[in-house]
Image 1 (cartoon, rainbow, N blue to C red):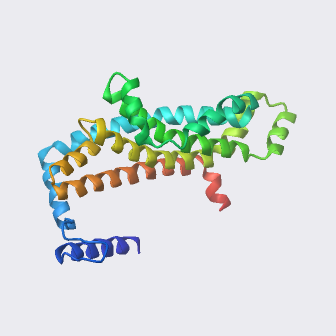
Image 2: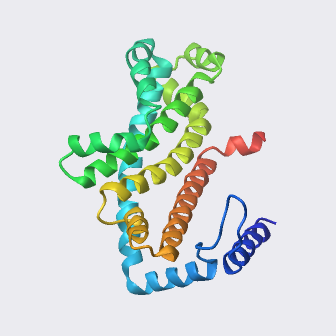
Image 3: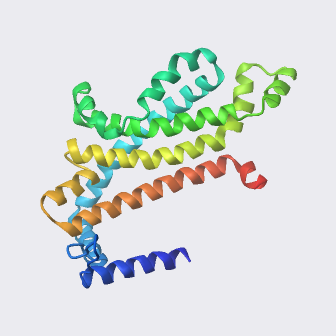
Length: 249
């Protein structure tokens, strides 16, 4: 059914583009057809440029995402478990959270000596808050009786965190990690369009400036596939590490 819906969408897009369909508020007169996009992807892959663009974007996403995962889980756990850190950190983080990634780009260019570091920072900011908030909610949702039972059996602080808090919060943490992965791709592509000199986002923006419409959609398709695959990998890892969640459903 899912494959059929995808094929139906591509077929409708192909028909609308070839017939230059025009509605009152929407036109497909200049929209490239899926076959043109496919030809563009083939040409891009044969030229050798596709791999270099994908490698550049992947390296930035993985660097920013890894840092966001580290800081998001650590800060989320501290904010949820320690009132001091909640009072000290939660208000500044809530003030920073609504700021979109695009708004950070000028400041990131000023703060970091290289455009590469500024793009990693934008990716970091995009992934940080979904991971942080889901970690906070996951830790807070743990039944207090479980922690009290562990302590009554003689468990220390580290043991409680490792054997009770972390396993209990893992499903929510991996939900945040999956959302953060998609957000990091969105933010990275935005940063590459503005300050990058290589990467999938830069390729898409360069195609727009050259009015190469099939390449624009090809870049969008590459971004969508990479974001989908990377989020699916995170969800797979989450399912493998939390088998009890599937058994309870």
